[in-house]
Length: 319
Image (cartoon, rainbow, N blue to C red; front, side):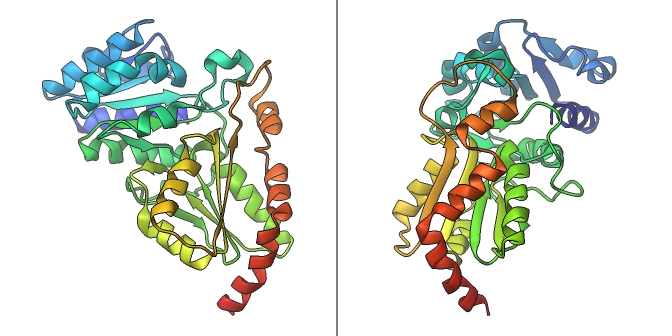
């Protein structure tokens, strides 16, 4: 995802002389192409992430379109006051990019995990929260974020994430993407869990269950049209995210469903526990401990009694 980000930022800077990139002691080789073409529009703030956000707000107030980039917990938790007061309060069009979201940096321990960032930022007024599902969605999300002309938090993975889309999709902030249509279960994914959700759909199809996969790349604002459709057509709606069950995608949809009740629909939320992940290891091993592998999600679906009860109803309705 980060390579797609770096490549797309170069394209955006070529098209718009207002684009300026700020980094916090990271991405030096990643941005070699950008720096060679736009040396006057790149600033390395060093290990001063809060200062970087305030710099970006000042640049935005003077007509520039700043994009800030560093590791997710360092650009969110460490800078929350500056994001709240300097960016959101003044409604400045700063794009805040968190790289290595969720458990991407599992090998570096809990200081580098980021399973609370969506919760922190989606409650800030005027902030848009966007979590692309693969590198193609990253490439589409950057121009979409620039077009919003408001604060945007762009939460991306690290590297090596599988592609789900065959090409760059027509991504619009606030409009989810139907990756796979289905009739029995609606699986709503956000961020780098999209490839896992797609794998779940393949496994379930082999077991005779049709799973619709939705890439809910925008958590704020939510796509209410998609949610109305999902809660009216499916007996089971499942959210999956590499983020805490508190405050993330599942919480946002649970809040929405409380205001738009569908009594016959079961909402199942899958995410990380309300606990720090101790120890170090690969992202895959951390996901296994959190029950966020395709196999673990399939098991949860099959163990949900209401799922089994609803599938026949939906099959009759779609016949």
